[in-house]
Length: 116
Figure (tube, rainbow, N blue to C red):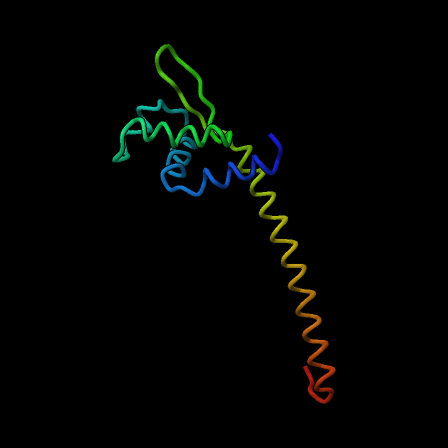
C-alpha cells in the first residue's frame, strides 16, 4: 500500500466515532469481536463492518482462536498520520511566519514614522 493511500485509509477510519471507540477500547488490550460489539446499540454485523474499515487501515490486527476472532490495536498507522500532521503543521507555521514578516515590512514601509 502506498503511504498516501494508507494515510487516506487511516484518516477515514478515524473519522467515525464508533471506530474511534473500538480503537480506544483496543488500546487496553486484545478483545473478541463480540466483546467489542457489546457497548454499541447496533447489530454485530454493523460492528463487523466498522472493524473491517479499521483492518483496511491496518489499525487493527485480527487472529483466530478456534471460532473466536480476537482483535488487537496496531499503532503504526497512527504514527504515520501523526508524522504527516506534524509536517503539515510545521510547513504552515513557517509559511505564516513568512507572511507575518512580509506584512510587517509592508506596514513599516507604508508608515515609516510608526515605531514597533
